[in-house]
Image 1 (cartoon, rainbow, N blue to C red):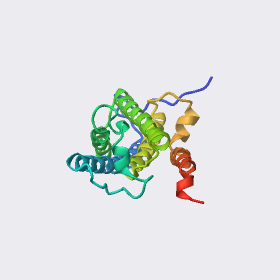
Image 2 (tube, one colour; image 1 turned 60 degrees about the vertical axis):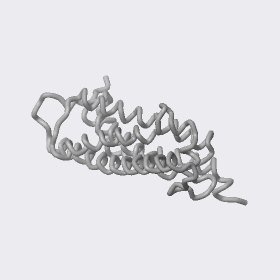
Image 3 (cartoon, rainbow, N blue to C red; image 1 turned 90 degrees about the horizontal axis):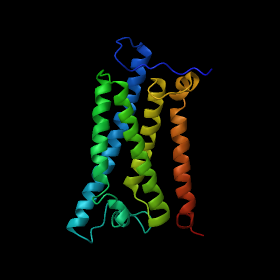
Image 4 (tube, rainbow, N blue to C red; image 1 turned 180 degrees about the horizontal axis):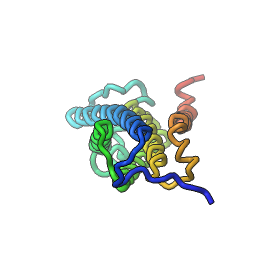
Length: 210
């Protein structure tokens, strides 16, 4: 029978020093990724407001025909829910930032709370993948600040999943739970290679003109 990792979150006050250090490592990763994600989303909101004020505004990352935030922002996909997508990022990353700061300060959360964090981060990554597909294969233009969000959210997802596997919030064999955090950076890098490798292949003709 395959054993599963014991749950470390909950009402018990007994937590090992290793568990506390591991949670603080997650808090540091979450803090950095949330700050970068918030910066990317806030910059996109600023640029979108400038486009509302001036339809001819040239955004700060309008570099050429295929690397252009302005092109992406003017598409229906940029307002998937009827308002600019970056507003979602501002709220979501503010929440992650608050959780990260709380963890770094020594706060503890119940397993159900971590499930909420896991679901929120995972849904955010699904949305990121959708945006990646749209910009890469439908819009045929890339946005630098969007790509920043792709990177940080992928790292955030993998490390949040690893944290919850290690803590027993997500059920998994004990060996998987023990090794999850050790492999988190490798898995993050592998996912990013797949995402940006596809982008490189898709735009190879304009990046490396014959």
